[in-house]
Image (cartoon, rainbow, N blue to C red):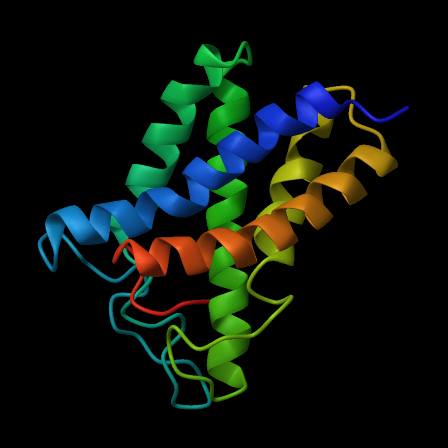
Amino acid sequence: MVHLALIAKLLVLLSIANGGPLIAKKVCGSRFSRPIDGGSVFLDGRPVFGASKTVRGALVSIAATTVTAPLLGLEATVGAAIASSAMAGDLFSSFVKRRLNLRPGSRATGLDQIPESLLPLLACLGWLPLTLSDILVGVTAFFLGEIYLSRMLYRLRIRDRPY
């Protein structure tokens, strides 16, 4: 049995968690944009995550998603878990992309969407009655939706690139 109403709520939270940093960048510009990795480089001489992964983005993501969860009938802790694990997935993607020598903001279909949705849905297993089918539907819907929304946000001049 697939829990479509629950998946829809989780997709809203995933969108807020992953979109919050983009909105914060548009609103704040370079203000408060302290890199999470502090400008550190890894053993290969490349940035750990890169300058585009900021403390501001992570804090906005966690705060906005935590506040929104109760509005959707979910615990605030679920919102915090979703945002925290979405940011962990985003950092994982950035780390891998830097190791592959891909520039910040470059496209890596799958790597850009799957960790940011799979990790949060797995993190919810302790709070919500999610099934494997729910997780597969959620990740697939996020993957397809993120590609579509990314193009729309580019047209609205919220994203710098159309992917």
